[in-house]
Length: 244
Image (tube, rainbow, N blue to C red; front, top):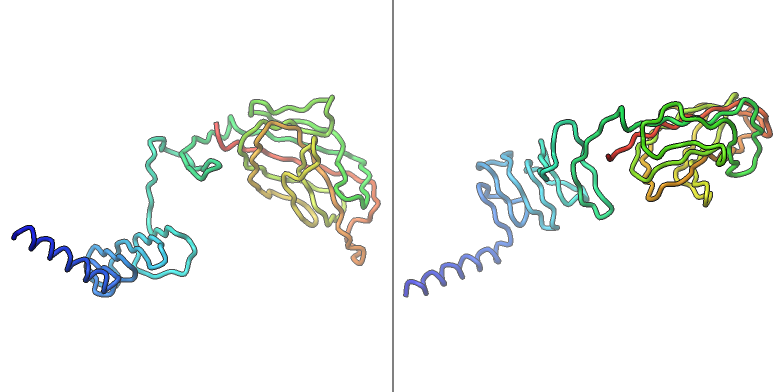
């Protein structure tokens, strides 16, 4: 008989939950299918599972964000690899881990320059000139006379900082390209000069890279560098490796 009473009680609870469709703990006005507050009151914080499957932690405020996980306040991700001054990065499957970042041993700066380069209207004009490593602290990076105007980049994940200028006022696109395929690895549009633009680059394999220039036709402006034009240019790319 006692077992039967328990079964009836559980059944009644399930039926009441199904009828209400929302469960609130420490709140009489749940904001989702399940809403737990640390104490009763509209502004008390806890966590909520919304009707459309979002998990909201640390706030009772509803949201129109498309994110599935919304956290207000500090968050700790414990994987066993965490530590001081580390950053969190994911692999191709979205699985993350903490990584160490030691700037001095993970930075290389490459410069490509020419005091008299012939700029034309040819799209993706390959830039040529003096290729040199101003500093090199990443294993595998190199320049070679046998592959001129290029930099050999080791496989890995990088932040790349672009700086440079062409004498005059250029309106153009600058592309970091794969030497073997001529495909873009990254393309930047800019006017006047290029200073400190940072991009994320993931090199799946080690490869030679170079730079290509595309002129934007702004012939109506007297300020824009004329094409064709023979003039000086320089570009420096600083690679910051994001994994050891």
